[in-house]
Image (cartoon, rainbow, N blue to C red; front, top):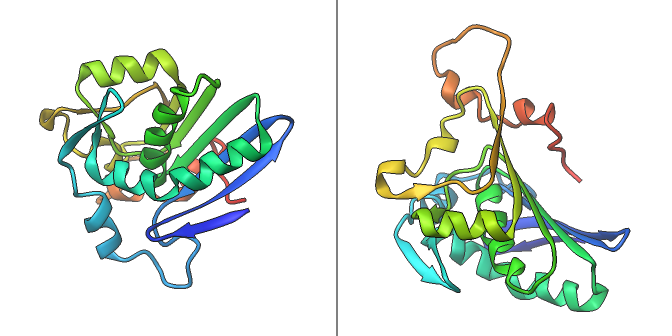
Length: 192
């Protein structure tokens, strides 16, 4: 089932007792291309906020809360034995927030992100996330987005990094080009 709620799009599926939630970058499934406003509204609302024992990036928490009820309804409907969340770019950060919150229900949660910005604030939040969520984050080349918001603001990634090096030499604007989805397709990201 595909969903589009405000600036969060994705798909939910259920197979082999696992509920899978995929979150796409804003605008991915819509007729209109991703707008700069989508990024400004979600990505650059970097004020840290406390929620459920974590400190999250405000924009990513707000984005998850738009679909939280929908996802929890699917959990009640299917009663899965595990939950798998993944996302590309902003979708990786939004699904990371969701993974942290859904893990509080006691179900096993697996999270995979591809080119995700940082969404946890502070070491305590990161350690709690790593304790409760099995998470890997894929980083292609020198992807610029994976270094945002800056670590000196206090933001951190959760999960283990899987680095994928490109074979070509560095080119101008490479950090921006390394964020494009084709680099992440080799590590398993695909559209449903």
